[in-house]
Length: 290
Image: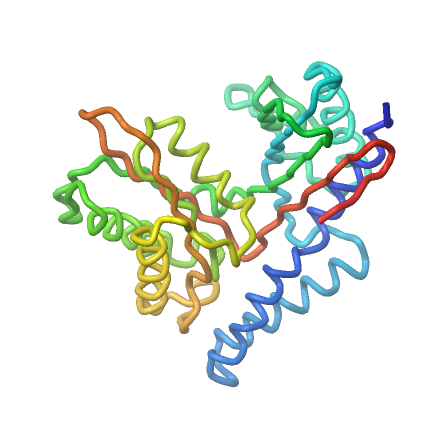
């Protein structure tokens, strides 16, 4: 079996220092719509310059390297215990190499572990056995700023005039964006889960960030809602980093989960412009990254 620790360190390095190409292209596209000389235009220029320097010098794109969230799809023959050990070891070594900032702080004592290792929930690791013969590990680095502005709504919600329907979902999503203003480090991306319980809603909404930006929603009603929310969010005038402008949300992904009759949750997860996700695939001795 392949020693997974070195390739996992490389997965972390790539995630932390190099934006995915589809994300960088989406950010690049905003330059043509923001007015030359405006704060929005200059902000986007600086964001793109920062991304280029981070990739060239192999340093973190953002000082907050976020919560590492791993999603592991493993074939028969791999043991969760061994996979967890490899991931934790790689996280610790990547932190020592400054690809990750020490982010694991105990909520009672305030002490930073110094290694990005804490209780069983830090880093977050989701395991799923697959029927394939390949090991696939996705890594999402979720920064604190964008995590802070995520919201969950229980519909109906009279404060935003939202009922238990897709228009209520739209109102909840736009309220979340409006409340975030520039604190989520716009231009950002939305992952929205309709239904589920409070826990599954947040899990599913964040898993949407593993999708490529050009992923098409197979549900026509949800696909139309994704486009409408993105369009209307950009009409709020919040703009890059809250300085005003035309680009606040670059993409919205929505999923629907079965719910209890008594509950109708809308969970909105927000991803900042530093949208850091990478995938490592292991087939036999061959390892690839995307």
